[in-house]
Length: 258
Image (cartoon, rainbow, N blue to C red):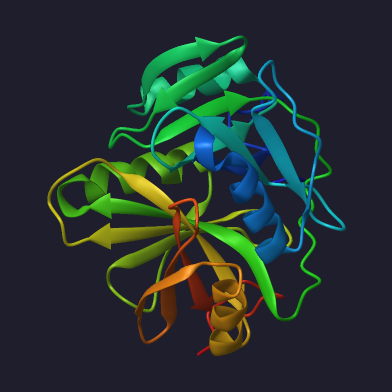
């Protein structure tokens, strides 16, 4: 059963996401270099561009379903999420009930913002709902939702209810995550409480790495820059401006190494 492929007692499929995609929204001027960078550091092949302006690319792992896409935009770099569900109309209605705000329609795709302002879309795609964890050294497997302190309670409640995942507390008080019992169940979602009391909710991507120093050097060779080094993670900036982290987690399970 896919994450989110749950039914009520009356047999009606819920609006809970079946699969979640992370989108790297990339400034159009950085597009070619960005696709090359993210394909190189993930080891995933880029699909053929699609869309009326050839503005979408999917990075496809060697096995299992893809969950990482890139989109060329006219604006600064950002992350948004696509939530695939069996019933898009029900998913839109459910997210509005939980506090999301409609932004626009892109064809059949409903573009929304979470209560704290994180952009996401309701979409429908076919999946086997399996994420292949077959690289013991490094895997891009997690989105971290960065939440200013005043927005924390409402945003955590929103994503917990919308995804249908169980809220689990991290090793540090500023972290929680929405757990999936199956390590091959797809994109992990980490929630981070920021000290800042200003701004909207945003997001960044995390790699699970076995050897952080070695992976830092590998990413630097692709022109990423180190922003700061913490006790369990290193903050990097990609050539296209996206901030992301290399984290001390087991690439085969996604779990923090204690």
